[in-house]
Image 1: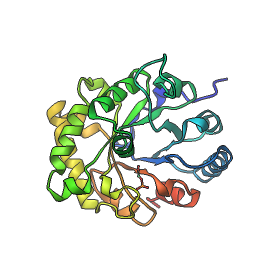
Image 2: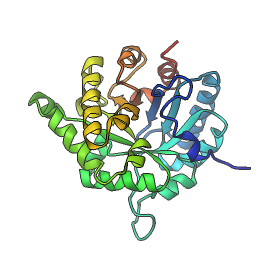
Image 3: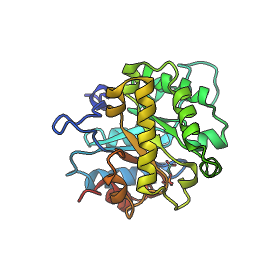
Length: 270
Ligand code: PGA
């Protein structure tokens, strides 16, 4: 019997029934929880989401929990993802984790270029690009994060920054590759601050990103790609964010750590 889900089943960015982009609600636990707490959360969430349909749900959890949690969740709709990866397949890279390793413990997704990786650990656009390519090579769906700082927004550089991050991050990524990629627009000033972008600010940025994808690839790509919003998403603002036509889901940090609030975010349509 297979212990994990088969990754090829999850590239369903377009809903077969509605022919629309399927919403994706993703949690990013960052460096939080112990294994016991993580297992407790997974069991509770699985139970509470057993009747959910029409939405994809993903938890990006620390490396050390992925194996246990993906086994627990193998028959549920909840996917497991990593929060980072290294671009080499194997070798003398102490402390790093490859795409193949993530895949081998049941991950189908991985975050690449989260702003905390960019700002705290100095990840460059070129490194993010290598990570996206490595993820795709390992059959993982990259969640490619982009977003401007407050200073960049206030000096009206948001579009330049997004253009630079998207163009360099996707350099050499094929059309097949981009169609398997999810983009997350996460303005740095909204992450963990309690100050979310307004739904229209987020929608505008998503439209801008779709325009970039149209130039880099084509119209079909720009229409099919799911673009998530991230930054202080919570049960109170999810409905308004999801009403925007170009917001296809969310990447949730703080509010994904609590089962009640994450359940409410997933079930925002009720
Ligand atoms: P937040 O984090 O929801 O706590 O703002 C979002 C993220 O970093 O992905």
